[in-house]
Length: 156
Image 1 (tube, rainbow, N blue to C red):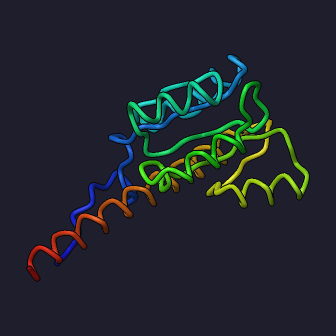
Image 2 (cartoon, one colour):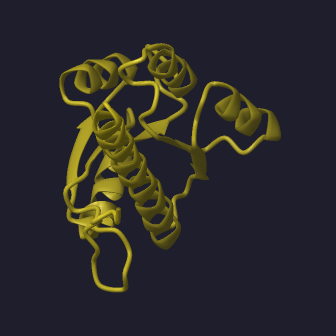
Image 3 (spheres, rainbow, N blue to C red):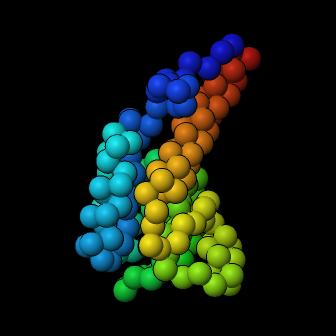
């Protein structure tokens, strides 16, 4: 059985049908992320803080969350921890976007379940590469889950 994964030019997996949630309390940062990521062609949504992000995720689960760490009301660490604690959102990839660059901050991001992290100021090519990679991984995981489900049905 071969997986039929849609591909874009260059043989990489097409991510244009994916949904990405960008979470940052600074409007300028959101605008920059939106501008950098628009070439992916996927749906880009924004949230200004942790509670707004969690509400959005509950209503419309994204394929990837880009999450600022330092925010009022609820830090990115707290948001990520809540996402990982809920079975419905536990597997959504999280890319932490942060001005923090201490080793302890990176360790804490990993501890709360972040899949990757990127430091501010964000570099366009690095952001696109990491985002595309995490979206492709999410699509492959969904495809694997579907395939396993189909195999189980066939085994009856």
